[in-house]
Image 1 (cartoon, rainbow, N blue to C red):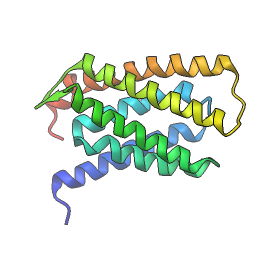
Image 2: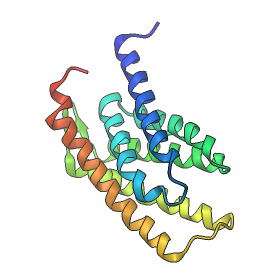
Image 3: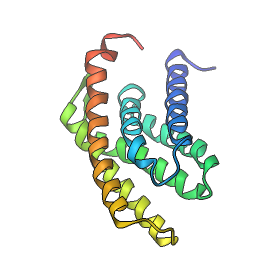
Image 4: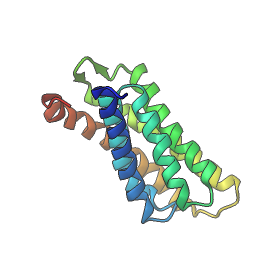
Length: 170
């Protein structure tokens, strides 16, 4: 039987994963990267803050499984989504983003930015290696926009936590 905390964690993971899937469902890759990184990084970072270390990993896995249904590249979609969650979790621990109920905005923004760059570069490399054509300008834009959106997403997650969620008993 699920405890209240465990049930809450499962609900948050399911909700955040579904939101990520829905936003990705309507935009074809690789152009979805221009619009979805902000929300994805925001939700993965909130997952770390609320659920803990396993939050972003579970959200990445579930959202990757859901998103893989729309793509012919399911193994890559799942792997990159899981890696994004894993990087958010590991880097958040390394940079000590959260101490009790306090969250460091700058550290979380850096964490999300680094994770976005790494996953973005791997996604671009995989796309190029399997022979899908991507114009150079699109590659550069994905990198720049992904970095900016990752940083903003991490910063917004910390701000939402500090201003709203930390004061609410979740």
